[in-house]
Length: 211
Ligand code: SF4
Image (cartoon, rainbow, N blue to C red; front, side, top):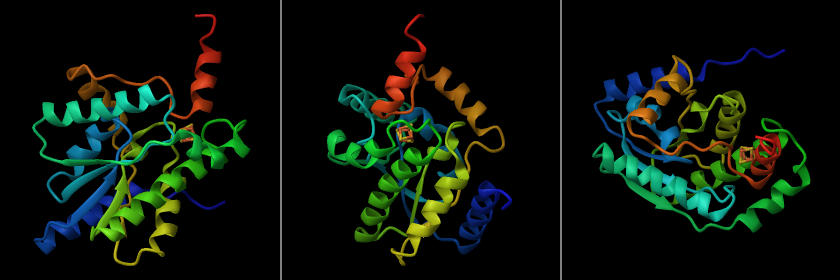
C-alpha cells in the first residue's frame, strides 16, 4: 500500500523557498467557511498576497451557504485582514447533478472526491485566468477531509493549468484543528454541524432526530 505523504511538510518547504526568494506570490485560496480559514491563514499570511475564492455551491440550503460566507467575512473584519473575497454564483441544483449518482456514499468516499474536484477545478480555472501564482484550499484543516485525496486531486489538476502551482498542505497537522477550535471560541464564531451538501445535512438530521 502506498504510504501517506506529509503534505504539511511540503507546505513548510514551499514557504521556506518563498521566504528565501524575497518575493510575495499571488495566492488564490478556496475557503468554505470562517472556522476553516483560521489556522491556515495564520500559517500562510506572511508569505502571500492572498485572495479568497468562496465557491461552495455544495452547501445546502442557501441560507447555510450565506451564513458561512458572512461568518468568513466577519472573521476577516474581526482580525483586520484586508483580503478580497470573491464569491461565485450559488447553484446547488446544478452542483448536485454530479453528486447525485453517489448520494448514498458515506462522507469521506467517492462523493466527496467528486465534490473536492469540482471546487478545486473551478478554483484553478479562476486562478489561471486571473494571473495567480498559486492555488490552494483550507479544507485539509477538517478532521473529516482526507488530505491525501485533496492533495492528489490538486496535484493532478495542476497539470492543466501550467502557470498556477498547487499549494500542498495538510493544515490539521501539528494540532492545527485543535488550535482552530481555540480561535473559533475566542471569536464566538458560528461552527457548522455538518459538512455542507444536502446528503451530509440529511445524514446529520437523521443522526439527531431523537435528540
Ligand atoms: S460531505 Fe462535504 S465534501 Fe462530501 S460531498 Fe458533501 S459537501 Fe462535499
